[in-house]
Structure formats: structure tokens, C-alpha cells
Amino acid sequence: MAEDIRQDKKANFSALTEHNNNGVTKISGLASNKTGASKKLVIKNFKDRPKLADNYTEDTWLKLRDAVGAIQNSTSIKYNLEELYQAVENLCSYKVSPTLYKQLRQVCEDHVQAQIHQFREYPLHCSLDSLSFLKRMNRCWQDHCRQTIMIRSIFLFLDRTYVLQNSLLPSIWDTGLELFRNHIVSDGAVQKRTVDGILEQIERERNGETVDRSLLRSLLGMLSDLQVIGQYSFEERFLMETDRLYAAEGQRLMQERDVPEYLHHVAHRLEEENDRVISYLDQSTQKPLISNVEKQLLGEHMTAILQKGIYQQYDVFEAFYKKDLAKRLLVGKSASVDAEKSMLSKLKHECGAAFTSKLEGMFKDMELSKDVMIQFKQYTQNQSEPSQLELTVNILTMGYWPSYTPMEVHLPPEMVKLQEVFKLFYLGKHSGRKLQWQPTLGHAVLKTEFKEGKKELQVSLFQTLVLLMFNEGEEFSVEEIKSATGIEEGELRRTLQSLACGKARVLNKSPRGKDIEDGDRFNFNNDFRHKLFRIKINQIQMKETVGLTPVSVKETVGLTPLSL
Image 1 (spheres, rainbow, N blue to C red):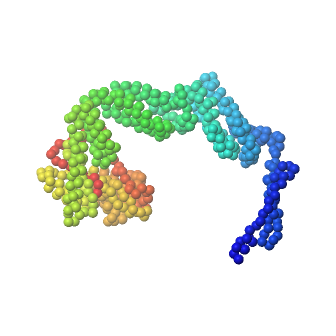
Image 2: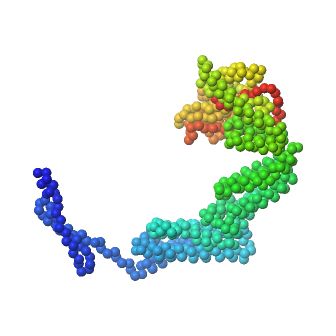
Image 3: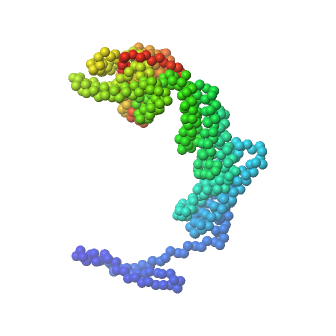
């Protein structure tokens, strides 16, 4: 029974093929259903596409050409943009795309070619200075970009079908860039005047004048987008002019200024050049630019700087270099220990072994401290009551390191207890030595919970002492915080400023303001939000003055807590 049902559901077809007088094929057939009735099926071709009117292509192109001309001349377009878009789609549907693309390119090329005259005739306009020339060039470039975008929006169907399917053809936008590059910017005289004008503006700025940075950014972006190369390409000439300027400046200032003042000037120049990269130069220019400045202002005068500074670079240089090196070593911010030691080797060669002996002692202290901490961790593991805090200590030999002003602060009982454990451990191994804690160098990582969730704050020891107070109360005044922590007033104000007035405001200050005043009150900012889990809150530094700090040489050891 099941087999019979399946046979009934099948349709039997007989097909006939006929050819009519017009050559159109028809396929007809007979189908029978299970009731026995027959139905004739006929399959026919689609009707032929209607032919275009004889003058449709030409008339439509004239309409499109008028619209392109209106865009190029900044006049109103007579036709609706949707109507123009549809006209392009119709032409493309009737295989007119190759002709349409060539016609559009030719119209755009004719317009761009006409623009070159205003720049080639530049010498006849005596009143047109280099800045006016740059503004005219920028206006022409901005107009061209705007026009190309509008033209492409009308011919978008052509761009996304015919052009996209032909890999050898540039897009409408790329065609616009190519035409502007070939007919305007690649012209030798125009390119030279453009680059000369940009270099002149940069030189004016280097000499202290105010220039239009947005104009320079636009023009340099143009040169980058157009990938202009050749005899007058910008970057090559820019670096050559940079070499020339700073070579002359270095020679002159080395004669006029003492070494600290000269080095301050060099730092200022490097800061200026980095700012130019951010503001309007291409990012790829930064490395060769900074390299050239350093070479002309430092590299070419290194021997003279050392010789000239020998009577002033050595105690002054040692004090500054030692301070910066100490900061890098103690906070773990050195880019490379090998690079630091390489620099030390060069200083030893230039200044002698006596000059670098203390700096070498700093590296030795850091290596010995690592060994001490391994032993200390083993020691604490054997204690009956191990601390929940993790302490890392660097042992600094006085005389090697910069001098730090001793400061007594009120540490929490847990910290004091851990300090005593370390003191007992260390003096048990090195009798006769004296330990002195330096709280100004201490750092800690605090686990904190906000409404947003848990965070870790990487802070200084002073910031730590302030924040831990809010475990005991909700709000404190400046005077109350000073009394509880024992932090010196200037340090305390800078610490509170970093916590309540900086980028990461984990404390709220009342009343609001950038400065810390007597009577200000602080509470914990439970609504604090930040995208990072671990947040570093920088301590605001006291302004430094140029001078020497006497370093006492004693047979004692300085102790620095770095992380808790």
C-alpha cells in the first residue's frame, strides 16, 4: 500500500521543444496529478530589455557633466542628487560604464589642469608672499578634496561596480589624488615653493614666532596623502634644514653659555621638536628628527661639553645624574640595565674611574639587595606568625646614593612590626651597622574596593599613610591628617593634591579647588571609576633648583622600603 501511494504522488512529465518563427525557444509539457487531470506547463524567456532612446546616453552625460561642473565651480546643482545617482546606475546597467568612467576622468583632469595656472603665475604676483602662496595651495587642496567626495557620491554606483571589478583602474577618490599630484604638486616650481614655504614657517616657529599650525598640518597631510617624492620632497629637505639650523646654533651657544645652561637649552629644543611631531609633523619623522637634533646639539659637542664642564658637568653632573639614576633603579623604571651600564662605561672612559666609582656602587647595592631579600623571605617563612604584608627592601650605602632628608612619620603597627622583623634579621647578619629608613622613597600597592569593584592602587608611602586613615573614619581635615601621619606639611599638601586634585581622584576635597588650603576636608571617593585594574597615582614633585647637595660619607647603611 505504501508503494502505491508513493507512485500516485509522482508527476509524469512529457516535454516538447518548439521553435517559433522568431527563434525563441519554448518548452512545454504535460503534468498529471493523482486525480488524473492534466495541466500544460509553458516556460518562456524573459522579455527583451527595452532599448534606450537614441539620444539618452548623450543627454544623460550632459546632465551629469553639468552637475560635475557645478560642483567644481561651487555653484548650485540644477538636478536632484538622487536623480543623478539613478542616471549613473541606468548608464552602467546598459554597459556604458567604460565610456562613462573615461568621460568623468577627462572632465576632472581638465578642471585640475586649469588650476595650475594660479600657481605657475606666482612670480607675476609680487605681493603674494610665501604664506599667501601656502594658503592658496591649501584652499585649492581642500576644495579639490571636497569636490572629489561630492562627485564620487553621484558616481558611487560606477565606483562600486565597474571600477571595483577592474583592479587596474583607480577608484574615483584615488583618481582625484592622482590628478592633483600629477598636474599640480608634481610640478617642479610649485612643489619647490610649497616645500620652501612650509620650511620657512617651521624656521619662523623655531625662532620664536607664532605660526598657523593647522595650515602646516593640512599641507603636510596633503604631501603625505599624495606620496610626493622627488628632488623637492619635504622630509629629506626638512631634515637637511634641521641639521643646518642646529649645527650653527650648537656652535654659537657652546661659545656663549656655560654647560648647565646649554644642556637646559638642548632639553627645551628636544621638547619643542617632539611637540611639532604631535602637532603637525608625520609620526614617522620623529625618530630621524630627534636623532638629528641630538647629534648636532650633543653628539658633535660631547668632547667640548666634557672639557668645558670639567671646571664647572663634574660635581654638578654627578649630582643630577646620580639623582636620576637612583630614581630609575629604585622605582624599576630603567629601560635597560645593560644600557645603563653601557652609559656608565662611557662616563668612566671620559671622566675617569674616580668619577664613576659611586655610580658603580649603586648598581652593586641593587644586586646585593636582591640576595638579601631572597634570604629575608626564607627567614620570614620560618616565623611562627608570618605577616600578611609583603616587604621589599633595598639596602643603600650612604655615600653612593644621593642624600635624602630624614623624616619621621607615623607608620601603622603592621608596618612597624615588619620593619622590626627585618631589622632583627639584617643586624643579626651584619653587626655594627646602623639602619635608617627613608620614607620618602617608599612605595606600596593597596587593595581597594569601590562601588565599581576592586582596584589596586600603586602609591607612595605618604599616599599610603593618608589613604589608610579612611579605614578608621569617613572624613578628616588637613590638620587631622598631619597629626595622624606625621608627614611634613609641604609633603602632605603635595600628597593630598595628588589624591584629590589629580587625574585619579580617589579622595574628595571640600571645598573643591586645585590647591590645598587650611581647613580643607577630605573623604573617600567611593564612586571613583577607572578602566584599569591597577592604577598608578603619581606623587606631585617639589620644584627642583640647580645646585649641589652635600653627601655625607659614613660607614652606615640606608634602608629604603619600596613596596608593601
